Image (cartoon, rainbow, N blue to C red; front, side, top):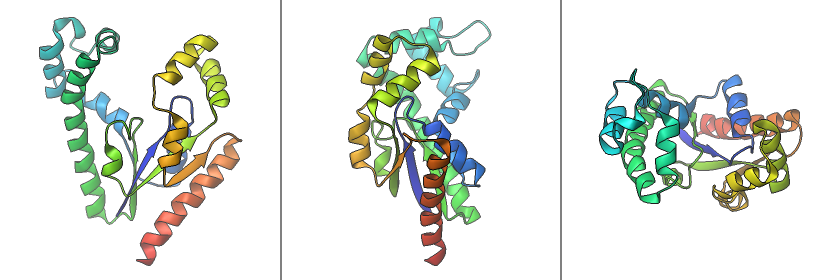
Length: 202
């Protein structure tokens, strides 16, 4: 089974590509969705976060106060690393469990949708990386339109992430999302068929 890592940057269109892959029947494991599952009330991950960051990051009914936690970890790199030390191993274990389940089903390939794929070292665990790419001006315009941000705020959010041009240079395959949806869909279909076709011929 071939393992594909899918990534991009804010407002590059990774969610669009992930949705297209699901539509055509590709198994997609969403890292963000797993994070949310692992941070539900009563989970070990949520309990570990509460122990590390204090009761102020837990709401009265037991859910994680993401805004409060965000204010702590984005202001202090050491605290962010402490959070990552709790969350990343648990997410990795769950993703590996799901990959193995799909392998047992005989699936030819699986897509791991991971926003911080390079930053979290997941590129070492996948067979190939797909990066969803847009130029910076397009990225900024889409982010402003989507989130109602000022140009300055959009720039700050883009700058907070790893450079998308560099991600594209490191990728095995680039999905160019600067055009229309039909063009992006055609690229995704071709890329998936190339992988699945290769596996079926093996």
